[in-house]
Length: 237
Image (cartoon, rainbow, N blue to C red; front, side):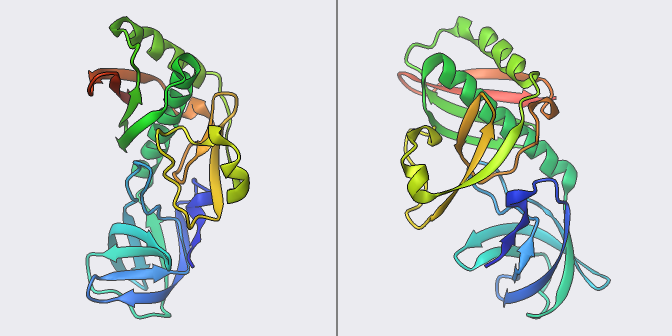
């Protein structure tokens, strides 16, 4: 299994690693440890590069399976056992960390006001969207919601990471803010992101350490997605 550095240290940008498996047909390598996030929960995978000696290998995709985290390359991969170094595109990753944290903060504000679960979501660096079940939504609610979101972000709330046994997590329904529980049955340990005092939920993505790092957020648009459902689009910076 790959040691997933990003899971405990989202600010780690580089790593030294060894190739533990190779898929030459797909030009991908499995590493013993990585800072590259493989994507999930609406957050796209990291990009960046690996270096094998003086050779730069562009990372064009990252995925995870039961074996660990695979890094898809733009050139034929090195052999198993080779040492290498790697670095993510930090500017892009940090923007995603800000965006992901802003989306969790929005979840917290919406939950506090409407007790409404998330039905879907996605993000790119600097922008994201979340779908909510909001049957009582009034268009006049947009500006107050944006104001409340920015007020919470400006409180410098710490963002903490913890891990719970699956059995403990299953006994806490508040950890699942989605309409459907998306945790796979094979998961034995649940990673929890806690924006202290605002939002606490199971999540595998990367986040900033304090809400002040997000900056100001704008609710760019609220769209109807059918009777009782709304899509809220936000931008940061």
